[in-house]
Image (cartoon, rainbow, N blue to C red; front, side):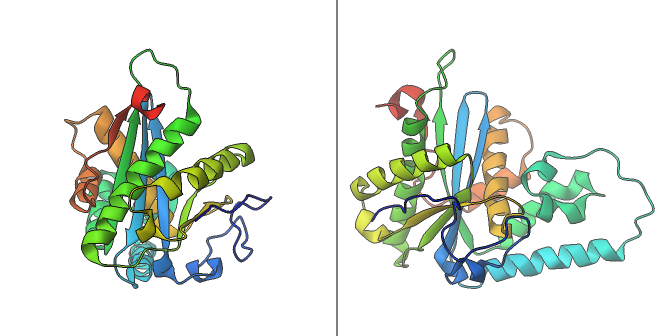
Length: 261
């Protein structure tokens, strides 16, 4: 149960182009064998979300829903100019693109999409105390992986499902990816319930347009982060994610000190 060593292409399955969206079948696994990691950081709070399908057709259902939104957008008059933008564009440009003329309803529309998907989320959070240095990247990484995978292991135990084979995370620098792989390889065998996880591989998306499920994971992470910054503010995406959390994912809030033990 070890993470693969990194080479010049962080995603070490079938070679894929870095500038175009790639069907999950090109990765070399059945779609239901792939889960996705979303990440968000704001001030002293780091959020990681693990998103996995609960049915084989989950990711194809997502693709169909996205295609339907694009078709509706293409059928509307585009004569009115677009005013303003949204954080959704930065986090999920493919999913939010068809909603660019109705930003006021975009979050609710995407929340409805997430509610209808047969997926589950696990959330892990690391908080740094006020005035504390943002150091210990390896320890934070370990805490975030541990939080998400502990929740996923509990889900497997109660659902009687088989573990997915690959976690696909947003790629960062080669040095950071290598560090994350090393932390993951060291952590996984010692994780409670690791036998249920099996040879769970971690890989990184090499850049360019990500798969749609990764945008869902990124949306979830950003929604959790925004809720933590402004808990009283309406946040339909966070509400949708919370409804599909896998226990005990509420919220794995770890202090900076505990993350560096």
